View 1 (cartoon, rainbow, N blue to C red):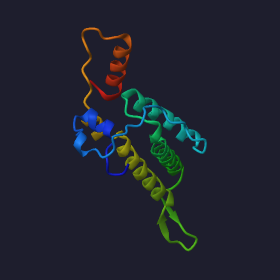
View 2 (spheres, one colour):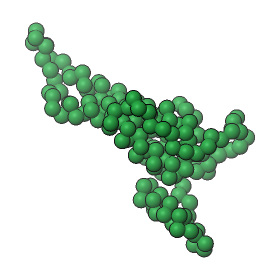
View 3 (cartoon, rainbow, N blue to C red):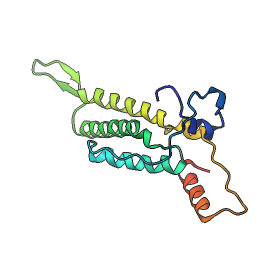
View 4 (tube, rainbow, N blue to C red):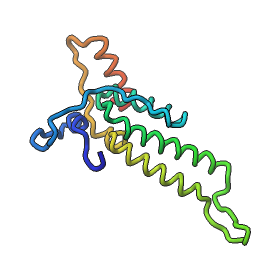
Length: 158
């Protein structure tokens, strides 16, 4: 998914052009299964983001691996930041030389990897601003339509 937006995001942004899409197959929407190998924090983030993306209508079961990569890196970043909160930022070797705590690099790399996956999934602030929120129908709107619109406004602003 690196570098190319999914067709669903392009459609929501209003930039979709059929003549530029090489694949005519659109994966069926749905929530992918959360992988068992993820940590508890990663599983929680996987499920949270999957619910949001499914509500917006841009999640497919094929998105499971990139969503799992996002969740794993998010959890790694959180764990490294928590450990950094308990440790010194500058450590001293037995020979007296000071060096930065290696967790700084771990946290930075995990945050960058999570941010890249978030961009691919359409989760960044720029992606949220670029997604137009459809106007609620005034006539004939069902309770489900109203519920979905309320959730979109709650998640993405009005």
